[in-house]
Image (tube, rainbow, N blue to C red):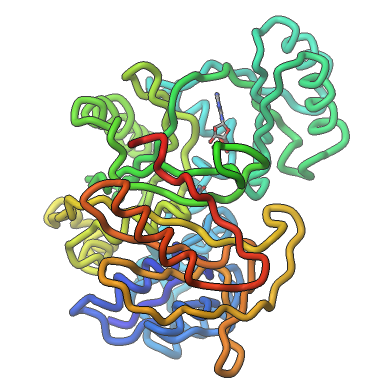
Length: 425
Ligand code: AMP
Ligand code: GLY
């Protein structure tokens, strides 16, 4: 099979790395990819949301399955584009259509969906620009901290949590009246604050049945000790020790099953990944959010723990035969540590040479996130540069291997968190 992966980050390198090992693979293409994906497949300089160019590539290279990495092309309707095109209709796309991608693309849609299908989540109210005054009054009736969420996609920045009602009222005004997040904040969800510890559960579904993939915990803040601004994710660990069998059974019964049934019930034919952001509230799961894709850097610890042929699983999703497939998971722990550019998640420079990428260390994998090839050199090309994943018998062993390797790789401005997994030991 010839396969096309859309995207350019660490998640897409992890997909590529795994699919390159499949006995079913003939040729692998990544659009646009990075210097890491180029080691296991062929990069094509096409943006992940340039649908006409993707069509040409799929026809020219006889692609028989497309895997969508990021949310943007999904929310813009890449899957719908394929289904509406006579020449593309029979090429399976892994990733939901626009209707299913709303689980991520609209906070209000996902909250309504959860309430309607009895899925545990924080109480909420939503307000449009015209309802600003009601929203300001509503804030006076709820207890702090105040959780405000822009309804639409806001590059991971659309959630603001504030302790003071005046600050929350100012933020609501900025979002609704001053379009702080553009169109994304033309509607705002105000949510009850959930206490607890977060983790993510990943589900692969063909719309009929599902498989639960290994869970993971992400580290979002830029500095050790959960300090500083939020990032896309600075590291991840899988499995998560507090996600016991009993907790995961509750997740399956209370969240996964009603989510899959709810999608069917709404007539949403969903083929792809569902990323469920959860709060463990004293042993009970509460859903914080859905994403219509895999997480990044969670993929860099989830994929290495899947022993089965991943392409076979995805092919089964495309055919609607996931129930016939089996998934085998590696018992070992996998941890990833992100090396990022100085200044990230604020302004940072690109184009710094990366030195020391070649050591082959048993049990470690270097996934590229923001890199590009320039002649013989590999340069930084994003805020998140490399995700160093390692296996270990436990979190300490896995993270210490990644830290060791992270120390030895050099580029100007390199930063990483040295406490990934510490809270779970
Ligand atoms: P989201 O984009 O919905 O994942 O929100 C970003 C982050 O904000 C989450 O990972 C949580 O850490 C936090 N968050 C979101 N909603 C809540 C909530 N209701 N209570 C507490 N924290 C929340
Ligand atoms: N690491 C969080 C995300 O992918 O949204």
